[in-house]
Length: 157
Image (cartoon, rainbow, N blue to C red; front, side, top):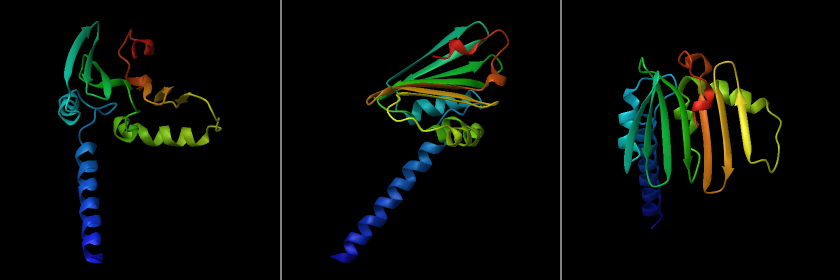
C-alpha cells in the first residue's frame, strides 16, 4: 500500500509539472510579439475574444470563465501593456517576461503594509499595479519605453 501512495504522489507531481510547463509558453509577454495572443486564447480556453483597433495600437481581449485579459499591442506588433480582471491575479512571472526580475526586486524593497488592497510597483522599465479583493482582482502592467508615440499609460485598463 505504501508503494501505491508513493506512485500516486509521483504521478501527481508529473501531472502538475506538465501543467506548469504548458502554461509557461502560453502567456503574452510584455515586450513580446502579437503572436502570443493566439497562444493565450488556446491556453485560457477562451470563451470569447475580440480585437479593438484604435489609433496606433490594438487591444486584444480574451475572456475565460475566471479571467479577462487585455493585451495592448502597438502597430509594429509588440505587446506594450497588459490589464486583467478576474477571480485572481494572473501569474506575473510569465506575463512580465524579462521585466519580472525588475518587478520582483522593486517589490522586495517596498515596505510591507498590512490590510492594503492595492499595490503599485514602478521601475525604470516596468509599472505594475494591482488592486481589488478576494474573488475580484484587477491590475495592469506596462513598459513605459514601449508605449507608442502619443499613447499614454492611462489607456491600459
